[in-house]
Length: 367
Image (cartoon, rainbow, N blue to C red):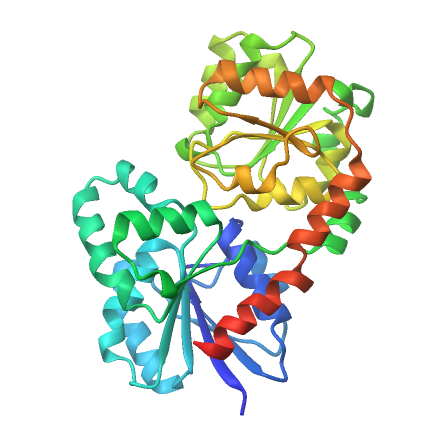
């Protein structure tokens, strides 16, 4: 009999967790698994990627705090073998609601960030630390995205090691390569020039504090004046970043591209990808850039970058989280000769869906 897996996520907006869930429901082996998808709010660009054989349930919750009763009702009605959630607050909700699930239901959660770092920004951080310590150990299995994230969970939150499994995010290597060859949106393409590729950096991600784009803009002060940045993404800090670029005299060196449904097409205009996150559970955008053959620069931690970037082969790391050290690593990358085909092949070998999805299936099979 097939195992029924109920995936629950707030929406399918354009983030890393949402992309992973869309890949999982698409690629799980239908001979063994019956995936269902529940969204707190049925919206987001990745909805288009959900195959027709996957039932999508709209819980119609404007905010997550309104979701517990609806989640409990759905689980009791559907009777899945596994409830699988991601994102910290939704994981906590599912684990609290779990006392009302049928006894046969297993709870699997996917942690997407460095919990100890993200809680430093929470108004009620101490309360959340207690909740994580009390509730996360109740999960039947926790999936984290890197060995360093796994170490953070084990050391800071008193979780039994046997309940934590490390699985990096998957990427659709061949689809990424195909989309990298597609045309860029005409309005944006008019601002870009492939002949300036060798002195152009690319960064892709939500424009939020933890993503560190302010550090990248400030790093331009320590780089030659012909180096510029394409910054693709939307978020609450866009206006602040534009003001930062203006005040630093970098406005002509930073192209704010906004959210791009196909950011892979931008790789033809850049020679180095920069991933400046202050902290990050994994970094799908980083691996996707490598899959396009683009070398990358990142801070060494707390991120998974140390497990992804091999200095001198596919990029460089900055050991300190500040603009000057980031600029130093970028300078090394700009001056280095990389083998783009080798970089792309290595990314495929380590992170392609064909290698990662079976690891999720193994968890679902044996939990």
